[in-house]
Length: 219
Image (cartoon, rainbow, N blue to C red; front, side, top):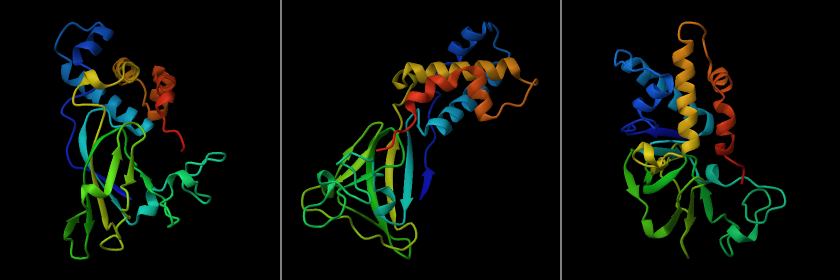
């Protein structure tokens, strides 16, 4: 599986002024530095939680649909795994009717394309599937539809999505915003004093605990 980001977020999930107020910085002399710390903090949150905070476009390349079959959870009847439950089976086929998208949150699936050996892309009709957006996004087969065969053995399926909570900072959960502010503050205060890995930054800033609830649950 390969995930390719095709556009970049238009802004950060917190305002520069908000972080400066938290730091009690009144001048504009260090705006560029603080902005870099905000970007680094946002990237750390995204890497830690698997979330895309501000909307951007992504292409997900897979070899087969089996890569996206939901993991089986013991005691649940609605997962397709080694013991698939009846709720998500295509009647009469034994195949899973849903696949779990590997990016989140998903605002929209813009297209599903099959790629031939020569690189030619053919769009799979949107009438064949339904999209469940949000923090646990899925594709589900429409009635009487079937998953198409990939056009080639390697990365023969491309799913194009718009991922993120929204287009501006207002759409990002306040808890995540607070985590970004806390990490940016820690980076500013400790600059030049110590090298902070992602794990150290999360723990030292106190942001790690805030982000626990946003880690992806197993389904």
